Every structure is written in C-alpha cells, then in structure tokens.
Amino acid sequence: MELSSNQIAQILPHRYPFALVDRITDYEPGQWAKGIKCVSAAEPVFCGHFPQQHVFPGVLILEAMAQVGAIAILSLPENQGKIALFGGVKNARFKRKVIPGDVLEMECVLTKRRGPVGVGACKAMVNGQLACTAELTFAISE
Image 1 (cartoon, rainbow, N blue to C red):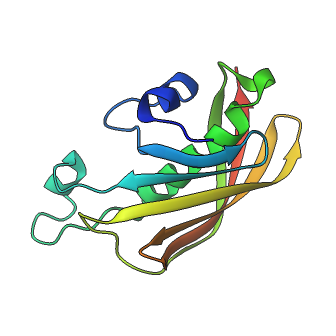
Image 2: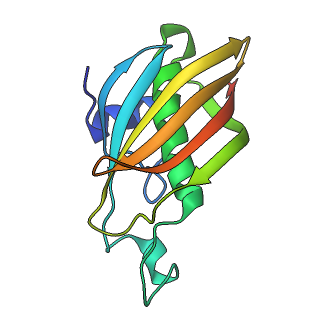
C-alpha cells in the first residue's frame, strides 16, 4: 500500500517544516513501513547546516525514520488519532552524508511491542548505499 503526503498527514500530527516523509511506498500496519524523503536545498535547515556545504542533519534522519515507523504503528485501527513519541535511540550509526538532491529511502520494522511501548529497527539508504541505522524506541500516547 502506498500513502501520499496528504494521507500521511491524516495519520501523523507533524506539519511543515517537521513533516519529514514525502511518501510511504509500502507498509503493513503494526509490522513495518517503507518511505521516502526527497532532500531539497530549499529546506530551512540548510540556512544554518551548513551554509557553505549543505548536510542534512543526522538528528533529522532519525526523526524521518521514526515518522516512517510511526506510520506502521499508528495505522492500526486501535491507534488512530494517537501520537507516537520518541522513547529512545540505540546504536545510531551514520555511514554517509545526505545532501540536497538525495532521495532518502527509509524502512522501519517493528521488532518488539509491550503495551504502549515498542521498538523499531530502522535503516536509511541513498542510491543503494547505507546512510543510517538505528534502533528506535517509541511510546503511544493519547
């Protein structure tokens, strides 16, 4: 199943400039999701990171992967209208720079869930090259 940016906005509470997923390319509710972020030089973050050599911040890559994972968990009927909050980040590794013009292809597989808390194994790729991996913990909130 694919979701457009408008459909994503019906599931996630994030809005510009913090809506970091342009499209969900496929997902299985409660299990996993894949999505993309098209990095553009017009994004406000590049005014300061860095004006002379644009690099998309690692913390925003983590947030974008978390938003992909949030689609997987919040698309379950019992979680509709709720918010997925960051609970933690483990083993984050950044393998290459992400720059304007790159298409960040992200995947998050939900590996554990106990009540409102869960864990997702996430990765982000650019042109088939690994850009980032991390284990993200989330908590579902009303």
